[in-house]
Length: 287
Length: 188
Image (cartoon, rainbow over all chains, first blue to last red; front, side, top):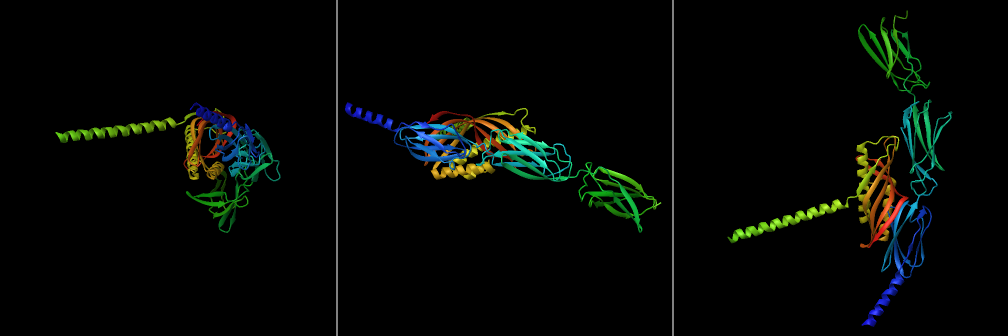
């Protein structure tokens, strides 16, 4: 009886030694690199590598090195490693960290259309990714460049923080399609912002008789930085005569708006575009 | 006399059944309450170009915590559809890829979050993205071919970017940050 127990105990001890396993994992692995996991002992076991970024199961021979190719684990994040033998379970963990080389940007530029010379009117937010779409959490310089044809670009460099860099910029004084580009390393992303002229800075009209009508026309309408006000902007001509008021709306074409109104001697004619009022005329029959 | 005794017995049995049901219900409620993670939220005074309203903060925290529940549900059942309520974009694609890996390996995992320390780190000017850092503690469980294998308690830092959708915030980017990670114990 004692002999049998001794033999059983010896077998159990041998089994424990046979399957005793020490698990060695790296602390950090850069995305795109092979992950090497080493075990000690002898016999067979299963390794499981799990986390929100990946899940792998492998049968391994204890005492050997197991390599996990980058295409199996490339998502940045924490991974838990279980080594399970018939008699024991060991666990450890490691992190896959993003590669420091930016490969792509998620660039949000707002708004897509805005008036010229608007203070802090443009907002740019760039998230920086490596080749495996991992957010690069290490700080990186991100360059924001706003440019229009024939003008010097406005350039700002912002260090990213936890994968994101943002900026607010004034819109340019010149109207037109502006290129708004974010760059980090070799990664670039371009957006086009339409900068439209602001409200007219000054509005004035002239009038001349055409037959029995009066032809009224604005001077070219420009905003306060000299851009022609956008075509299609509505200009309202108002004629007040004998206590009656009549209005004509006309769209701007190439900076000017015009209309024909009844030529009433003594009529008062005014003009407005949006919130901007122009000069006032009194028609005296051309005298 | 015999009839009234039978009636008394029936009432007693009914009372016992109702009492047991109430006890079970209370037990369930207690158990559910016990699984709720401890949550701390930190909003630095200056963390982005846009101020954070309390209502937005509460909604973001609610929806971020929901993402952990949805992730666990998806990973436990290898059910990609469970991700839809909480994830979008890159985060959803990556998690769906992990579920495909689990299916190929015939394993499932469970994530029971125990605590979160959520810090708001960025809110974009136009209000279209919010980034949070979460020092989380959770238990990750492993099952192979339907058999439970092991569980480990993990402390790790996660970075999440959330974007607004029609009715809620969804997690668009979700990844671990090597800072702040520390495994604690193993259970079998």
